[in-house]
Length: 424
Ligand code: ATP
Ligand code: MG
Image 1 (tube, helix red, strand yellow):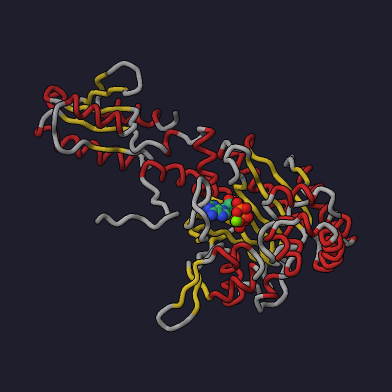
Image 2 (image 1 turned 135 degrees about the vertical axis):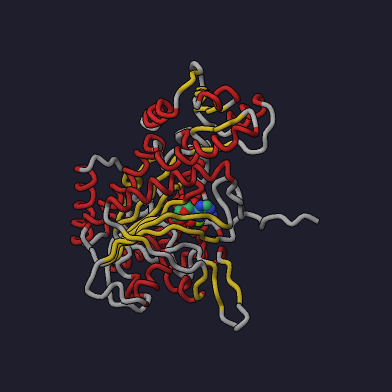
């Protein structure tokens, strides 16, 4: 019997890995240009960490976590998101003592959901967390950074920024009373999940995916009307900064996000192009979380993007550059065993002179025709061939593989040509 991968946990095969690398490299370059540094935390954490940070009455903690007892009898959980672990690490290692932190991460997350397009049991997030800065300009800069990322990836036209403020704990407490009054009066129209939440976590109902509940909520009181003066000023500062930065947004008063730790700013980037798994990135402010997890009260703001969903969107829009979808730039072939040594020498020279050039040598002989087939499959733009006569003359056959005339060049001529190839 052949053993297969676990349901909902995919292999990323070489053919797809280029798109992933394109996203990761673009994100990392942008993160570094904003002065962020990386943090890496374990895939497994104490179960209590997630129960306390994400909230007991959330989809994630109620039904989606991979929780198990290890051999010592400790309850452990595969991380369903990375923020909790980052906050734990920051507290544990004193990263928040009299200093601010701007951190980025990437890695797997695990949720036991029904697998479908854009929704998996192992998936990957790339995210950012900033600590110690309460100013709305930090929220704005992070959102601007995501906007820049979509632009550079070529997907900006297909996504929309949804923005909301869910206010301070005080505002939410007042709003909660008004929302409960509204919903209790319409109790017979609520779905089963929402009825349960009505008692334990009524704001979560705003996040409901049930259509009739969503319709009911159109007339519900709006959280925006319950914000404190300071909440309002924070939100106004954020929207002003986004407007200054030319970042278009839509205010969505129903946006609350699926985790309990958020307060004030919440945002999501959504697309119509991926069906119901349309949220590619979500984030917000979590000023209470560090304190809640036992650290000294420290403001925080961050976001996470779903790598699989961004990759799906990039594929749908066909924006992945060729260089991330091919193996080689040049492919070296020889017609005779006697030419092998010169081929290897030339490859060595090219790799040394042009470190970014992708140089593949044909190994294993065969007809020139079959070698050219392999060259084509590698995606190379140029084939370099050394045969009997080139061996004697010291020259190289330069064969454009995507249209253009074949030429015979000296080694010097070839090196010149290669420096131009990389500028293309
Ligand atoms: P959804 O509403 O689609 O379930 P979420 O609100 O649970 O998303 P977050 O907890 O905000 O998601 O996680 C951040 C991002 O991670 C999401 O915007 C999404 O792109 C991605 N994501 C979340 N769950 C999954 C999953 N099961 N498979 C793939 N990507 C996911
Ligand atoms: Mg979810």
